[in-house]
Image 1 (tube, rainbow, N blue to C red):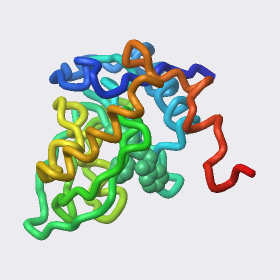
Image 2: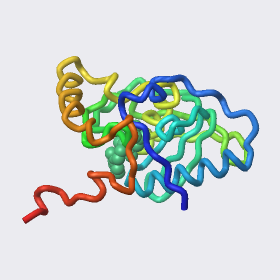
Image 3: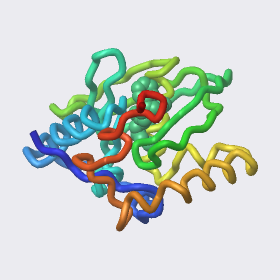
Length: 186
Ligand code: K1U
Ligand code: ZN
């Protein structure tokens, strides 16, 4: 098992555009495996390459026990109807916000064999696809919040960010994974 460090808000890589994956090499397959290991340990449902300091245009997702790798994904259709729901981000631990997004999207991507596929999804999977594809273009859920909600999310992050020196979240000593919830403490 290979666990990668997660980059947190403030690391410039989270705001950069990724580069399309050309050939799907053993290195890309190994990266996907390490990203799954990292995502599961962090208790996430998705993880995009920039979150682990990589510039490849790829992400891993697992909603409802259906692991999926999306390489060079594109949203090819978006429902004009929108839905609002709470999101978190493994790169902004303990900060949450309600994000309005298209209710359903159709995504075209390559799998780890280099085969093109399309997936149409709403609900949590549709939201997760959009959240991960945003990461691949340097966009974060905070960008969708109103000025007031964004300000309060940033105030919360100001209180959290010192736990992550160098904008690096090391999962082996991560406070939100290793500490009990305050309500569960005596
Ligand atoms: O990319 C990431 O930062 C992962 C992120 C993805 C995501 C969360 C919520 C809505 C859309 C996309 C997470 O997995 S954060 C963990 C989390 O919020 C969550 C975990 C299990 C079920 C639902 C949400
Ligand atoms: Zn995220």
